Image (cartoon, rainbow, N blue to C red):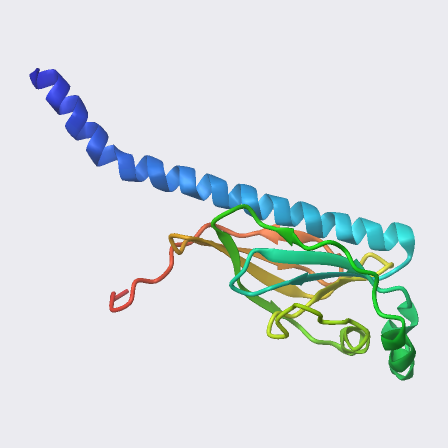
Length: 181
């Protein structure tokens, strides 16, 4: 009985560590899924010759990947009115796995991205979440997306503009209010 009691006590002490490791693994798997989606959008842009747009809703798991049919908007700012008239082709909204949301997103706005962004229709999407663009030459917007789970653990995906490749950061825990560092 004493050995059993010791094993139960050790299990109770070790359980939070196993729980955090499992939670981190699931968060990394979700980020891996987003990395795959971003990679597919980049490849689709290069093979089709059309700019692809990844849009997401902050504090939600909802995202879409759309195609801009008129790529001239990225090169000529005066063409944006024509591009807006022929709005982007819609893709069905997708969801991150249950319990995961896009908690933050940031993007560097350059001239090319600003011109293309004016052609994007924002139906049902929060304008505080910047769209990420993938161009036919393999480049993209420079961006960072942060995914969070229900326990406040986050992981950041960084997208390099020149290469269009995405990289996953480390899993971090949310700061506890009032805690000193």
